[in-house]
Structures are given as structure tokens and as C-alpha cells.
Amino acid sequence: MNATGATEGDGPLAGRHIVLGVTGGIAAYKAIELCRRLIDAGAYVAPVLTEGAQRFVGAATFSALASEPAQSSLFDGPHPIPHTRLGQRTDLVLVAPATARVLSDLTTGRSDDLLVATLLATEAPVMVAPAMHTEMWRHPSVVDNLALLRRRGVVIVDPESGRLAGGDVGEGRLAGPERIVDRAIELLTAGSEPAALPAGARPLPAASGDVGMGWRGRRVLVSAGGTREAIDPVRFLGNRSTGKQGHALAEEAAQLGAAVTLVTTSELPTSPAIERRQVTSAAEMADAVLEAAPSMDLVIMAAAVADFTPAAVADCKLKKADGAPSIELVPTQDILAELGRRKPASQVLVGFAAETDDVEANAAAKLERKGADLLVVNDVGAPGVGFGHDTNEVLILGHSGERISVPLTDKSAVAARVLECAGALAAARAASS
Ligand code: CTP
Image (cartoon, rainbow, N blue to C red; front, side):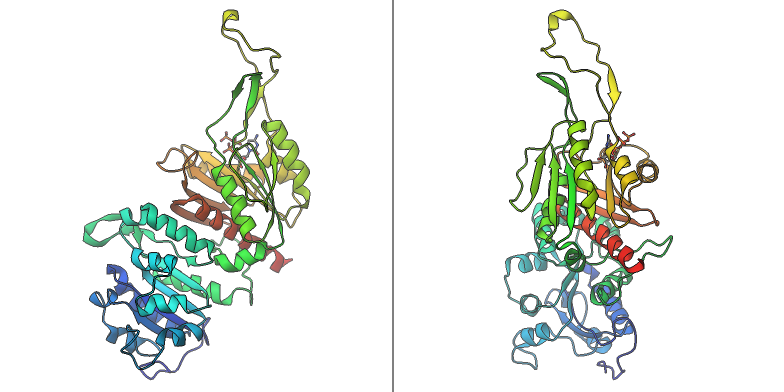
């Protein structure tokens, strides 16, 4: 029964208990619609409103819609220890909208209201749907808190771009209630029924925790960094890649329990769990990657591989006095395309694409040309994106029309999304084979 006396319905969330945390932002009004949709999907919903939330929406509204009266106090409600009661008997704690404050308190474990106490008192999955002004969403404190929460297994439903409070427009608008409910359904039903990818569909990837479990014990190969093509003993042709995104992918996969091999040109450190192969040139990278790839469950080509290399390397330093050299270049092997040709049926192959113009069209063509399953596309002309930055903003394209956009965030969070998408694809393949 819900608080209005209606019986819990059928639906994909039938029998699931959800604590719906609502925090204080203008988007709190959308949590009313979210609550209704969760009830319609069959869930038992226990609303928890922060003090800030009640400045925007009333507890009476949630009490009327949800399965039990809304609560907001650690001390003044009907139950003596409300946070453990809520946290222990729920299948999911969902916070929507989640303000910067609640994300920070959850990160640090600073509990001084019923919602954060419940978040700390639960062993159930936690999903947060942040909503805030663009400047706050991009603030390093918020970016870092979200990256840490994601690593701990918290599922983040990223906000969208659109109209914000005060007439501003930008990134930070709460994800639509439909998208949040879909993620909750995916999270709570994953494992019981792995979703197949219908042709032409654009599924959301399954939630971090579950797909993360999917890479545990699996073999993952990542390439990273920009190759250097020697001209003479002291000079080379190179590119601006630093290897940060590839290293973040390797670290993230290792944290998820995968056996990771990283072929890298970068000097960035790696954790001991990662098997590291240091290379310099495109040819060395091709040798190392093509040798390791056949036994891998997932191969991610994040490296910026030179397309051309000098036809010959001078044995001695080229001298200025000899005049400007003319350097003949010859094509290198396209490693990703070769991997695409040799790919075992169950292997997931992910490529990257650095584009500066006609980004999506070029990337879609590249996906086909290289025979990859997924292509992670950087618009390297955009601010804060691609080479050398700690942040990235990507579009993940798949063969079946999947198109997942990951707004500007740190490279670990991008890595987590890429692994989620690859995991969803692997799960769908396993289910259909
Ligand atoms: N790649 C590769 N071997 C190469 C060149 C690129 O494996 N010799 C891989 C990269 O690691 C990346 C993908 O191919 O995963 C796309 O790289 P990108 O530089 O964007 O594309 P190119 O094939 O070089 O095409 P273009 O330069 O025309 O954009």
C-alpha cells in the first residue's frame, strides 16, 4: 500500500524498496514526478527530504504520492533510529536532485541530517542524480567528489544541458525523471536479466557497480600515450598525447578487478597490479599490442599512434650546416584496424578518435573503417578536452546506434563510463551467444 491507500502495482520495480532522497535545489520539484514514476513502476518508495528541499517542495506532496510518509528529521519522526531503519531495509538509495553539499557530505562521511545518515547507514546501492549551476558542476571540488564516489561504486546519473535557475542555460540540469527511473530499473534488475542490445537501439549502459563486477578476473589490454618516431638519435616526430586517459582506463579496469596489461609510451606511474610494457614508436606499439591482444576480453586503443614515420633514421645527428633535411615519411601500420580484422568473436574492441571538425560524421566513418565495437570520440578542439588535460568530454559511439555523451568530467570518470559501455556490450553478447 502507498500512503494514499493504493496497492503497490506490478512493474519492473515491483517488490523493490527505494529511499528517495530529495535535496534543496530548484530541481526538487522534478522529484515529485520521479516519485510518481517509481511508484508506477511498482517500487515501494520512502521519501526523505532535507531541510533545503523543503524550501522548494512540501513533505505533504511526497507523503501523498509515496508508499510511506516523507521524513526529514533524525529526531522528530515516529522511529527512534530512522536512518538505520531506512538504510537497512532498502534495495536502493536514490538522491535526486543531489546538491553539491550532499555529494560533499557523502564523500567525507559528514552526517548531520537524516539523508546523509541514511546514505552512510546503508549497504544497498546508491545512485545520485546531481543538479546544480554549470559553474558548480565544473568546480574541481565537485568533479573530484564525483570521481571518488564513482570509484566507490556510487552510480551517477549525469545532468543534462538546458535551462537552469535564474534564466541561465548550461550543463547541470537534473536528468529527466524517465532517465533516472530507467537507470534504477537497470541497476535493480541487472544480473537477473542481462539486457540484449536490440538492433538500432541506443541503450544506456548498465550501472557502474554491476558492470564493474563483469570485468573482474577478465583480461583487459589498454594502449596509451603518443608514439615518437625517430628522425635521428636526438629528434623525433611526436604528438601532444600524454597518456592520461589511457592510464586512467588501465587504473579503473584494475580497480574493477581485471587483469590489466598496459602498453604505454608515457612516463606516468602505474599501480603495481598493472602489467606494464613500455614502448616508444608506432612499430614497437604494434608489436606489443598485436602480440598481447588475442587472449584479451577487452582491448582499448587509447594511444595516439603516429600515422607516418620517417622512412629511414639517420645514424648520426643531422647537422644544421648540412641544410634543412628533407624527411621522407612512410605510413605506419594501423593497429586498431588490424585488431579489428583479427578480433576473436567474444572480444570487445574499443578505439579512440581525436577529431577537430565534422566530429561525429568523421567518427562514425572511423568506427566502420576500423572494425571497432565502440569508438570514444574527443573533440580535441574544445576547451578542457583531450591531450594533456585532466578532464575530458567524449561521445561514445557503437555499431547498433548507441550514442552516449559524457559531459566534461575527470578522465577517471570517463574511463568508468567507457568500461561500463564495454561491459554492457560484453554482457549483451554473452546473453545472445
Ligand atoms: N590508431 C592505430 N594505429 C594507427 C593510427 C591510429 O591503432 N597507426 C588508432 C588509435 O589508437 C585510435 C584510432 O586508431 O584508437 C583512431 O585514431 P585517429 O588518430 O583518430 O585516427 P586515424 O586513423 O589516424 O585517422 P585520421 O588521422 O584520418 O583522423
